[in-house]
Image 1 (tube, helix red, strand yellow):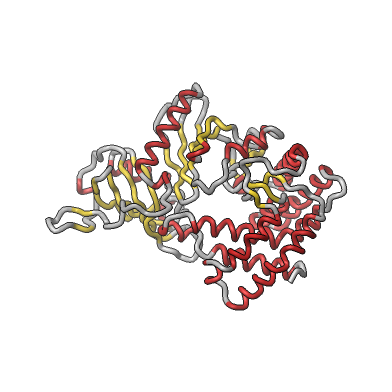
Image 2 (image 1 turned 180 degrees about the horizontal axis):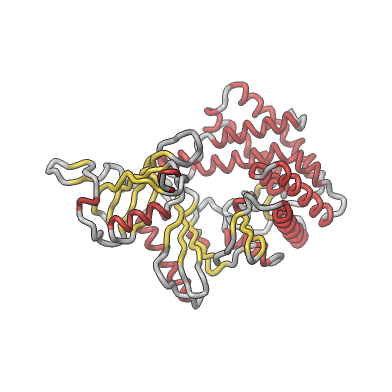
Amino acid sequence: MSEAEASGRTVSALVTAGDEWLGTVGPFPVADPWWAEVGSVVAHLEETLGTPVVVLRLVDAEDRGRGPREGHTTYHVEALGRPAAGPASFGSGAADAAGRPSAPADLTAPVAHRAEWAKASGVREALGWAGTALREAGRPPEGPARQVRTWNLAGLFRIPTSPGPVWLKITPGFAADEARAIGMLAAEDPGLVPAVVAADTPNRRVLLEHVPGADCRDAPREIVAEAVSRLARAQAALAGRWGGGRPGGLLDRTPSALAALVGGLLDGEAAGDLDAGELRLAHRLADRLPSLTAALESCGLPCTLVHGDFHPGNWVSGPRGTVVLDFADSHYGHPALDGLRPRDFLPADRWEAAAEAWCETWAASVPGCDPARALILAEPLQHLAYALRYQEFLDNIEPSERRYHEGDPAQAVRAAVAAAEVAGAL
């Protein structure tokens, strides 16, 4: 069995070139099981068609109940040049009354909340901006950008330059200003974050220096502890510099701000995915959030810049040491939300090392605080914060991309209720 066949994913591509419908390619197997990973899709199509292509968006996917992976995925793909391959490369697909191939009726129709990188014009504009920004930075591209990932939360391209590759990342308007968050942490620990080559904040585009190494999902205890400690030290330093105030440009997700939003979440779409008993407990938890957040704040840890998705898949360990990536969910809030996040991604022994390192660092940085108690009290709030964020995704992405996140808010609410029950808060 080939690597592509072993991944469990096959792909069909609905190919256009500007306003022209070219046809369907596939199904064909690809090596990566994850729907958002499109590097192998692009490679196959460029070899088949003889022209550069870009995957614009997910049109349909077979859900096998294992998250956004495996099964059959269908994408809208834009050919960036005239295919050298003839019509035989395309499947028959649909046809109009004269027998000519015709595109699916809604393939290019305008849709609310479609990401700019899910449009051919948006991709061309972003790549044009990146090329100009790199030339202005004195490192012009030395080859075409290679698309690596696309989904509702980001478009990711790797661009070769003489000093080394640069990553173009495009995110939606509801994402945080990554360049700003990276800059804040870089002021305290430059090696903890990737270098920003250029940024276009209004359009949520950023060019980041490549960070060599591997993610830390299987990293040893000492690397896990290092990553956790360095972020906590930088967060404590920022909190001290800000003196308890929230700097401009960071979304307010302090415990009290989160508590104020939960009622609306439970009265909205997420309620439809909860049964009556679950919803009753969730509302009870919402009613008790003021006392829970007061207890959390009494632990003495200051609010600061929070990464928002601080798990080992977003840490890279290599020649530079450990570097933290992906600040699209960053905000101003309680640091225990970052302190808890690694637990879902680590085995018990390495989670123990992470928790110990986090508590020791905060205890040393803020004498008299109680970080161990904060981790316990913050857990229900952490899950509710993710429920709110997942609902924000669903509220701001086009329909075909909702399958990445449907059911996630309710699942996070369930986890919040379970944590509150364990903590004796219900």
